[in-house]
Amino acid sequence: MKTAKDVEDLAARLSSAASAPLVTTPRESPDQQAGVEKNLSTGKAGKGAGKNLASKKPSTETMALTLRPTRALLGRYVSAAADRSRLEGRMVSAQEIMLEVLEKGI
View 1 (cartoon, rainbow, N blue to C red):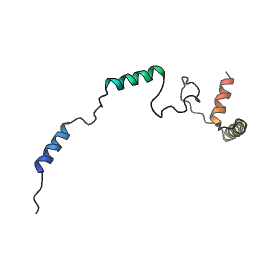
View 2 (tube, one colour):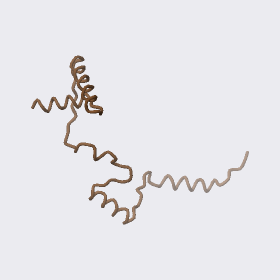
View 3 (cartoon, rainbow, N blue to C red):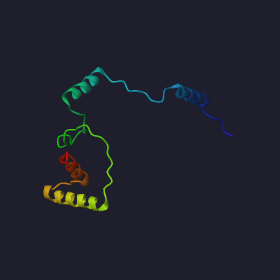
View 4 (cartoon, rainbow, N blue to C red):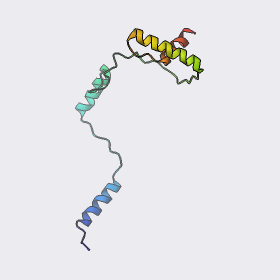
């Protein structure tokens, strides 16, 4: 049988790893913290984040709601969404059409 090499070293590393916290938070320098605060105050996101923020509608407070329309009614909404998609040159979902109809009804 071969003799094990560095057994004590391995035991020391395992015991130190077992006593260490599982998740460590990285320390940020004051310069990095100032950069984050500056981005938050100006509304600018980090690199690559928020590419389509300008094209999105402003967020409003919404609630989750489940609708279960009949097949015929859903077919009408899907047809209207397809027509609108062709007219506007962008994808319009049946859900968008449903929300518009609900907003008009109030």
